[in-house]
Image (cartoon, rainbow, N blue to C red; front, side, top):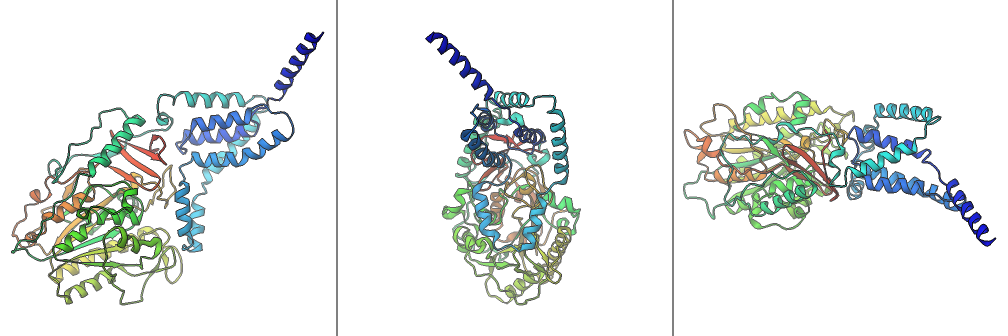
Length: 555
């Protein structure tokens, strides 16, 4: 009798347990949305975490407090997991942006918020919802969701989730054809190997090897200039928000400014997508590329380009079309870039633009001509001037109407100003090595990872920038612009400055341009921000977010 009772209770318990099983119900639509976004390459999907969430939702619980508690817990967990699966900025970046957002104008914040609305995806999501509600009347969707989730986990057991995303070649951004011979620098080491397959382990090893290799590289500057050295000025024009992608999207690739440059880097990588880190990397151009975190540590004294030049008699000067207060930009120049010069104050309050934070922006031509006037009145034989302009930054508006000024209009004005200033320099008779080095692009054209204007992830379209050099006042110019096609970065610029220190390029009747640009350091295409690393490997771009697995950059 007891055995029969026990057996009856067991069967009743099993039956009761079976009746507690529930499908995913409305969560089916949640996962269908994720699968659709994943298929399009819009998610950094985490299969295991999503499988655990499915198991949490399906675990049989009796009706009552436990089941209701799970329902309440599932909503915030689902939202957090969805955000975790997106390409949106990490928590650290959000905190950083939130601190800076207090300085942004309300109209700019509203404009940014509107960019996140994709009406096509909203329409597709509505159609998917109607389809789900219609089909679920006859078909249980939960088994298909579970099967798909298990399959996604199975295909990633042997490595990172590389096969989950659509892939495509990065095009000519990885070209290694050089017009000036094989790369070399004073302490150059062997090239990194790219022969191993792109597994998570091999990609991490390649990145670690790159960082270690770069620590050994630096530009050798002389202890003193030769007695017959000819004085000249170095003018570094650091432009915020300008990449090849932005130029092409604006239709200004044929602007006269580019045609008058002596040297153009076709494959220059800015290595970051934010202004502060870009300025630090440029100012530390005399050493190899460091990790993002190392930018905010003191570097070897040999790394600081402007300090190296100061030791050789180049007076350091600083000019900006803004105050440098936003994002502690000026403070970072002081603390980490080794630029201590006092900014040249504007001699006029006239300005046509206001920045995204409401600060007045002074015209580039006006500021540069003011520097030239000051320079001509000064007694220093040599100077190294760092000029930073944020005229192209997202969100800048007309000073009078407060209306947004189109990027193309602002870029046209900037290029016209620089072109006219080149003419002013030539008329002045001064000898100036002009170096145009953009900080990063504007992300004028967004992609699957980031909306237009968002630069948290340093994608190739953002970091591939038009670096160029012009020797104003030299007796000769190349018959046509010298094109440097190999992957390059700041170390190549420092090397060119080092080769030009005696100033004799400006007095020679004929410059050996081939010799000047030969054997410049090559730098593999690797870019970083605080939470992401973007890297080119075997012609394909990969990304690692928050030290997780590497995945192909969706294109």
